Image (cartoon, rainbow, N blue to C red):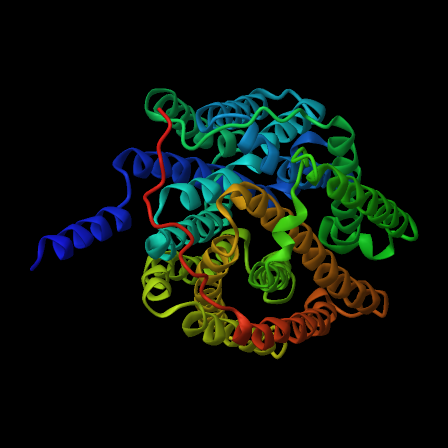
Length: 493
């Protein structure tokens, strides 16, 4: 081996390795993101218990999830700017501190109002976690190893929802609702302490001024759209008769969204945009984000509808319903790193094409199930769906952000997570509204809840399956981005 060859080989090894300090930061962010998502997924099953314990009507109790979603929709679009304006350490400590404080407020809340305040504070920290994690991975991990690291992100976003409903059901059956926050709080405090000790600043910051009109427009736009959608899907579908108000709120959100886009385009010329829309100049990024949004619509809609089907139609308990979802979600989590290695070696289409086909197949299969469907069959279908999601998330995360220039990573992550949040709200609203309209009509005709709910669930899953055909078609056009840097990322200490 010549000296030149050895030198080139050494550079290649160095460039493909991950800085140990950066790796430590990623693990801290993975733990924090896991805790935040775990908290988010424990609440859905707890709402009926909270309504009864606090003596509040269902439409009021639903605000504990609606306000959380609304806050996330307001916070996430600002993260592209925040991650450039402030250091990694500052953003992380602010996010985990807000999450821990919100959890503490929820734990000691004497009534509904304080509990709602705690949920809003929690959501403020949660909304920052995933964009921060994705941006950090893009800045720290060499291009050839990003699939493997994004696979670990897939593990987090699948295992946490798997454990959340089951944990919630067990806690509510054996203890009381305060333990939902009592279990989360110590983990959050440990993550905060570890972050204070080990978190390192990565990359460089800018001194761009904060554009407050953009923040206001973003809040009104994304907050309005998500809130309007949540009114359709609220409280098990009561939003099905919500009338014109949700449509008016969504229309208002769309108006402010147009104003937000116009302002960002103007601010981009001075590099002062809150959310840099030049990320959408990349065709590969746009395709990946569209697929991600549709997959999120199907996934979140299904994860909201399936527990209702299991409890209303299959007549399973809360804990049993959580256990039906558990094997598939564990499989999805375990397969995340494997999918990442396949992506690094073979590119996105090898995973994305079969993954999206599996998602659509599972949803069409769900459209045929009923009250007499064996539980084991539902578990198998859910495992197929979860495997398809695992084969989709990793290539979509990697291919979308990898298509951007380095200075746009934070904005790309913010836009991706924002659209995922909006699509998830839309999916929940759509499927729950379809289900509830059949359910209420059937009950009005004298049918039992299982008999009335079965055609509603079948119709909702059929719609989700048809929508899931869009990613199947688009998956053939996703490409693996070319490596955009030759040198390992610089660390800022």
